[in-house]
Length: 457
Image 1 (cartoon, rainbow, N blue to C red):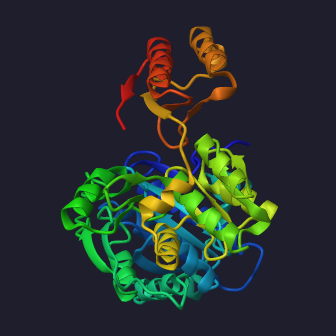
Image 2: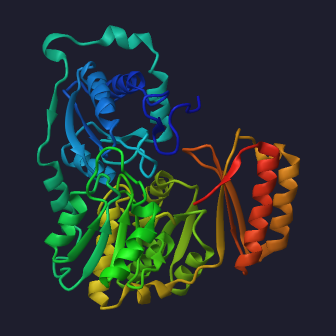
Image 3: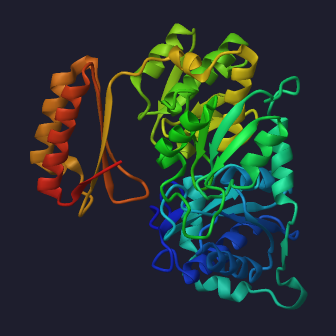
């Protein structure tokens, strides 16, 4: 059986339309509750958190109703970063955790993703099992009654618990005194947590995107729009800028000049620092096929190596757990420090970078020089239908011609998004102008033969 609802990061769509309806949410709650408790007769509880979207309220209530209807208790924590839910799920010894969020998507979208009791995202097999129960009438016969029905409670100090956890990931002998930081929380789930952590550690913090209204999440701010943070860094003559996305599981930086420092450079900074201190497990960094070839080169120069996975932080984490690695991430800003947390954590990642800055006494711009990126271009085409490109000869011929021209001096990576009807076209090569021309050739062929249109960033 293959997954129909679950994508690379849970179930996602426009809120109040299929599959992000209250009916589906309630069914997901029922199915998940049954699966998480069936192997143990004791009473269970499931943690539910969300970001700041308006639709989070209705989905939260539907999920909680479905879970309670199967005799499982619910712990509601309100708006909290995705990695905060992972942390609390493990800390509270809960059976599972649920996050209601569509990450970096606009406010009208929403999503549901699950964490197992150890704080890791569910494997594909368990998501398939949940899907298989959505329309299974057998669950109707298992409805508990009377005192066996689940109850829902609110955890009022969830934000405080997560703040304490984050601060403990920062070296005790260091602080952030003397640093002026611009912080953009995208009007999202970290709007309380991230400013508090940085200020309590001693930083002067200039905040952006900390007044959510349910509809402004990711709107012209956050990690999708680092130029807003960059302008503020220049205006306030700050030391650096930090931008999170809506659920705060990823982070993008700008240096003191307002220049973007992407996830690849941040991974290079962190990995080479850990290598120097003998703390990078198996001297290996795990990233995805989207990471720039310059990251491979930087790791080799530092005496380490890099392993690539399919796109998606869940696949990075799976490789890390299987291979015993401690650091992994994505160019988009997802970074996983398995010594600290089980999933990508934007605020935690920022703290690790800030610790390197304070320990080394170097500016972020100087640290970023550890890696030189090869010229890269990424284009998105919103397609009318998803087709195997191998079955579209007109597109295949263009792709093969581009691959032949670049040879060993570059890369061509073309893949469909796991969450949107987008075809992503990525090229790397020795000369920026030429790879842009080649990428445009591929995009034009896709639009002509698959339908759809080119998108911006």
